[in-house]
Length: 202
Image (cartoon, rainbow, N blue to C red; front, side, top):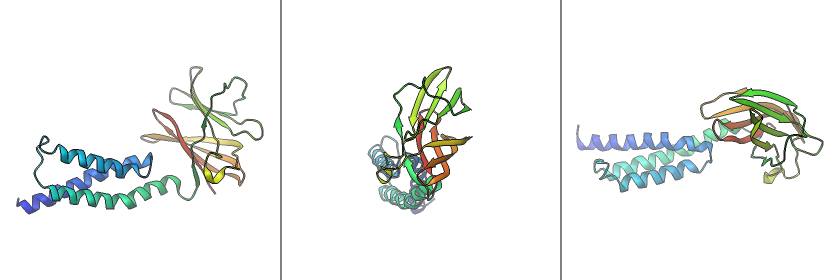
């Protein structure tokens, strides 16, 4: 194989690996894949002698630039697939109060325990909680007013919950009643870290 072909191969591998490693971080934040790619590239180049990589600096740089270009539409696509044209994302608030006095509206078997939905009194957002053997692992107020565009809005009830399972996150599908009426909603739950965020259709 000629040196030129080796350089093309090195650049291609850099672009593919960089994109594949960085893109999943778009789930956390749209800017994170670009940060991960640049940091990873910088560290790899700094250690390339120890890693015994071929001295094709321009090929690696070109591959990194190609990965950056590919990430632009790819990150936008990831965001659109999750959110579409729906309202959000909403992150709610950590629920610090006890649930002893609350009445459970819905129970769903989930992992080692149950997801509990508490539709509370008027002017209070529902609480979504995860309980294992009477131990509350986490609880989240499904508050939309923390979003700058929806400060005067309220999600009042969550009904008809169902679950869909994924690799890193699971999804709670529901019907949510808020200022715009009753609409479809989706809440994403990390498999190991708890609540992530939710969206409401418009």
